[in-house]
Image (cartoon, rainbow, N blue to C red; front, side, top):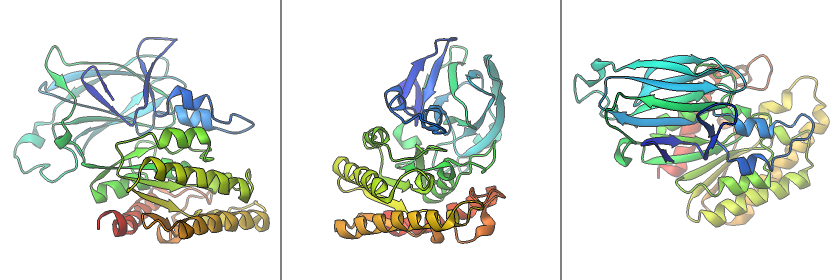
Length: 345
């Protein structure tokens, strides 16, 4: 999406803010958010409203400029990059417009060899939104200097879409980091990620599927599903939702790779859960995914074994559910190895 000569990546909608000036960055469009299940303890509408891993990208010849953002419901963070090079992390205080002063680091431009083989051209400024909050864009002041969106050749040539739970969303990878396991895998492979994961949700709802399959600039799809559904949906209901997700993806994207991950095996060991009941459901989910893909006859559909990505339970945090920051790094490297067997042939 291009707005004011700026690219808004992983942003499906820029909506007006009724409380103050600026444009709200929507990772999911309002139309989809309003259709998500908002029953007891279901976090879908909130999770879909987060601006996490939305990006603002632009190029300017100006060496000093100011950017203006605010955060709606709570304080937030942003990371700033020059291409793939980390520039800094900044806090956004909610309820007010935050001004961030940016000064180009000329060391990056001393030689053409620097940044030559990176995914992003080093002239591309990237502002990445972190933590669970809704971000508002108020403007960029380049003092009347030229500003433009990046050119195609200045960006990664390949993109994959990630849809999953809080694990794929990057929970516990670090509040000021950009190191979720999908992002690590993407950098290793030279891709960029369009992350549509929904922490506390990811129920394969029809509205989500319909939105996801409408994303056209995607080279392959990666689905990590089932973990958050285990205590809420029968095997039959999961199967129906999974089938719709896969059928619709293939219908709208013939010839593209669709990769699913079976339910992370570590979820079977969460303390205080009724393991006999939950594990039986997880077995049913995994079998449903395996049978669907095996019976499809579609060589471009693959089910990955979660143990190949998360091999060691010590990679988790103390909640015995989410990977630690180190766990995300290991998982990202393993995921890159697994999917490279299919997407880099």
